[in-house]
Image (cartoon, rainbow, N blue to C red; front, side, top):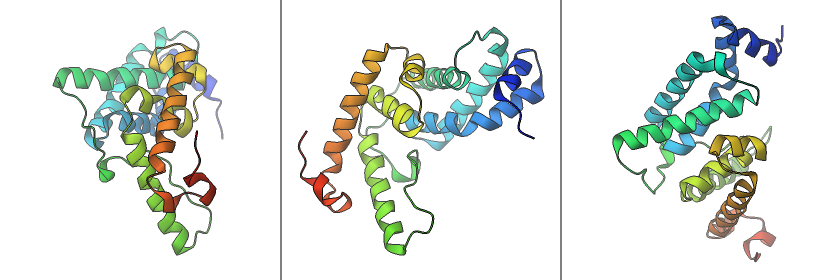
Length: 196
């Protein structure tokens, strides 16, 4: 039996723990994926995800309208940055492939062994290119292009206006496209030589 997410949210706002747990089940992968894209460390992404849901549980009765998932992602962003401030360090600029599986796997329903190998290489190239972006560009491209959030929701999560989101996304996409040109064997023949 499928329950309407808005009904679960209303019930959770009224103190129903079971409804809140069902909302966690619906959104935990999105929150973890976003936390992973920011932290690029499994343990820290786990901590951020857990802290996000604990904070959301304690403040859900105060939530006033808007998109619940965007609200959760905003909390996750704040929790990740809280960790960085507490640890008084910057995230590493390189991406460890084992610690950065935040992009969706590229595959079809019945891929050939060659297609699996190419998709794996392309995924690694994408992770490398997205991982090399600045924090503000990476979070926008992950929110919009990986997680499918709207410009409005990305704006709410990042705390900037929609124009800034669009500008960051445009720059991020351009930088990823330029970076991917360093992997010409993975791109369709027409894209490798394209200019912007």
